[in-house]
Amino acid sequence: MNNTFNIQRFGLLLKRQWLEFGKIFLITVGVALGVIITFYTFSLWDVFFAERPSFSQRDLGFREPLFIIFGFLFITVISSSYFAHLGQKPKAIIDLMIPASTFEKFLTGVFFTTILSVASFTLVFYLADLAFVSKVRSSFATVSNVTSYTDARGQVTETVDNAMYFFTKNFPEKFKSLFIMVPFFVTSVFLLGSLYFNRFHYIKTAISVIIFSGVWSFILYNTGRLLFEGKIMIEHDRQNFKPTDAGAELAIFAFFAVLTLIFWTIGYIRLKEKQV
Amino acid sequence: MITINNLNFGYNKKKLLFKDLSMQLSAGHIYGLLGKNGAGKSTLLKNLAGLVYAQSGKMDVLGFDPAKRQPALLSQICFIPEEFYLPAVKIDAYVKANAAFYPNFDHTYFANLLAEFDIPAGQKLIDMSYGQKKKLIIAFGLATQAKFVIMDEPTNGLDIPSKAQFRKIMASALTEDRCIIISTHQVRDLDNLIDTVIMLDENSVALKASVEEITNKLCFKRVKEIDDTIIYAEPSLSGYNAVVPNFHDEDSKLDLELLFNAVLTQKNKLKPIFN
Image (tube, chains in turn blue, green):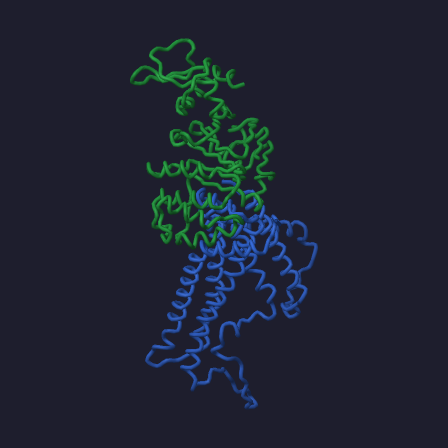
């Protein structure tokens, strides 16, 4: 018997965890869908129900902050609750005694908190957006959805579709590796928090992240200032700044990937050392 | 089957609960683990199951180090904790999700145990009382056919008929390749069930002896007056219940409660008898 990883045992563990975690997970997804629908309904109320309905690109401007802020909340809440029960003796004993390896138990946690939570939030957001934006597009089918202008030579230039679907507008083609890595990094931090603390996992993790980031920024800023102030020239050349630089993207990706791996490793060790 | 060598454990590094504790447990026995509150009964069981880690010492459970929590060992351990949590699902769903981890799980035996404990098979776990839940996890644990059965206060929450059923089931669950250890402070619940007594006191094992050895060396009887031969006595309605050395090979029934109190209060008198 392989005592580290066995695909059949891993499958059994996924099924078992779904039995316990699945209900909470589905409720959370349901709540997320409700919140997203509420935001869309509230923001597009005048577009659909005003006496003289009108639509502009600004009416859909709430989507980006909603996706980022609520998406962050969703994946962090899921992550910080996954191993939270190990802080309670009655639940911890049953879970730790399940005949599966610590690696399999941790991997199951990563699957539920990172892959499933990110995928399900994206799907829920996509579906809600698809429904509402389709409704907008059909309601204003007779009106042009495209902003266009006529230049001095009388040439009409189309600029942008006003009612683009969220994932058409924001599809992270250029920074796709980063868009994948950031949720992984965020969930790895909160998953570690759920293992590290015995109570109030979310708030304690959030406070720890704030304190750690503050201290780290302070040290970095002051170290940089101490070492380089008056010694190197910093150019504020925005014209030559290339945000799509593959090297920069790769560096940021690597940075988040390494941090994620570090947090996962610490989380795994923490799970291994977990005592009742 | 299970060997503990010089185990040192404490929840606080400065205050050890076990100091150089050593012991061996063999297959084919039901051990009764007794001790005062805080003596470390549950902690010793957790050490054996790998739920806590010792400061030092060596433990061997079925050839494995329990601290590594390897699936091969975990599938051979049935741990019935005093406090436990069961999800809000039906019994069938619970069994379906958990039984597959145990290669020798016996579904027929599980169904028989449920029937014996009078638990309807289709019931939802959330609708069950604490006692019913306890009976369910005992039935599930025994049906895993695990070689090492650890029970922490298993009779807590069981009603009187269930306690009798429990004793009957446990007696029939003992096989030659199985080792059962039961911790309790309700010593009367283990009457006629255990074959070896382990008593913990003051960081170590105060007594480890089979029931046969105890009744060979000690006699439990009712006396009218106390004399110098008596190791320990407690007043009763018609005199005293006493523990005396069994000089004349008298047959007597082990009184666990009396023995327990004798071990705690008359350690010096009992030590030479069992060493």
